[in-house]
Image (cartoon, rainbow, N blue to C red; front, top):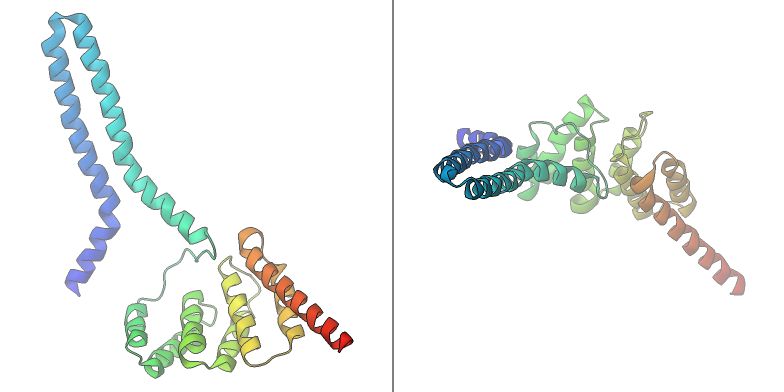
Length: 223
């Protein structure tokens, strides 16, 4: 546990360590350039060339060093927001242990712990996301997953990551054989509460259901 904590701490500080090392190396480079320029002071032209070349290399190197922490931060933000963005808060500290139980196939124990967390906070995105993953993908209890999600959506506000939960609820309704009209009503109502990239998959799912329903009606008419 101690080594794991140290590993996490070092991972979190990695960009700052890179930046500190980069600044140290940059200082050495600047010192070297200064000494070379001073040695070449007898030839003003040659000294100026060395000095300007050194400044260019220093700026290039500094740009590469600073790019590491910036790229990690920016890349993480882009990846989180690419499809269904995740909330900016952190999951409960018990999550690694619960995930381990899920990997080991101890679904009843994992669901029991997640259920206790859910009772304490029914609108916790991380708990709802994980418990419905287990119910939908591992256990196949679609009715219970639907109940968890319906309880979750009793809250008034919506987060951008909630679009993913809407899709899960639509899946649960369809798996239990719910009316297509009920699924369409859910998607139509909830998609209006999202914008941009979060809304697109919901609208696409709704359009697909409408198209499929129209095809079935046409088939029934001709039949």
